[in-house]
Each structure stands twice: as C-alpha cells, then as structure tokens.
Length: 188
Image (tube, rainbow, N blue to C red; front, side, top):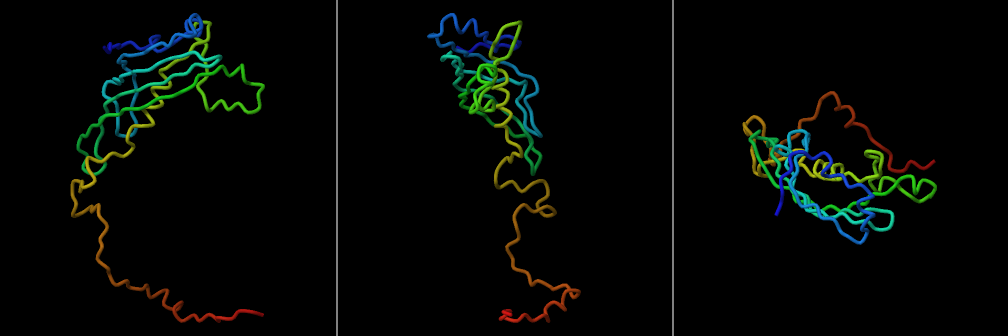
C-alpha cells in the first residue's frame, strides 16, 4: 500500500547511523511524494507527484539504492500545441559514498556516485536528488502527440519533406565556375 506524503523534507533522508544500526536490514521506501519544480521546457510533472518503490541497503561503506520511480507527465505537442500526457516508469540503481573516505585513492571517480551529505551534524543520504535527477532527465524534451501530427497549419508549415524533384536553377553569378577545367594529371 502506497502512502501519500506532501511534505518531503526529511522523509527522503536516511542518516547513516540508522542504516549502520542494522546493516543487514534492507529498508523499503514505498510512498508517493510531492517534489517542487519537476519541469523542463514544456514538459512537467503535475503537482510534482512521484511514486517511489525503492530499497536502501548498506553494503560496507557504501549505500545502494535500487527500485522504481513512477510519475505522470504533461506537456504541449511541439507541432500542434495541444496538451498531451504520458507516464514515466524508471528503474534506479545508484550508489552513495563518502567522498572523504576515497579522496586519496587515484582511481575513485566521484561522478560515479552520489556523495553523503551532512545533515544536522551527521552523515546521511538524500534520495530527493536521485529521484529528481532521474525524472528530469527522462521527461520528453520536445514531445509530439503523434508522429502523424501535422501541426496547426500544415499548408503553411509542412512537417513532411516535399519529395517532388524540382529542376534546380543555377545562380548566374556562379556560371563562370562551370567553365573551369582541371588537368587530370597534376604531377610535376
């Protein structure tokens, strides 16, 4: 059963002390949250409503987050400007690491993982950043209501290339170039 949570705040934050108390335990996050500002260009998540079905697990010194993120989106068709909508179902598999722990290692790439954050004086993971990034990257950048959409005025603004072959008129200013002759053998 999914619970609805309007005030995200600390609900997506897991202090490491909580995870280290029982490192063998897998924590489940199964709820609907509301995140502000989930929009790009013309696509947006209405009311920021996102469904989460995630697991959070401590493995040595890293935290593994995996599961599904579900959100509905709405947008304007880029051709006809009609309102359209769709559904995102994303799989997430991310790692959180302490940057300080690996700062002396040469091969550690910080971009491959999310860093632990210090919240209220202790290290924690914040799932909001992972959820927000995955949704914003998956929203359609220039959506179409259908591939056949002709737009609001297909006569003035055609969406299909004209396949008729037209005789190409040469620009008379370039006609002198047609008289140039090149030697086939330029060896000296």
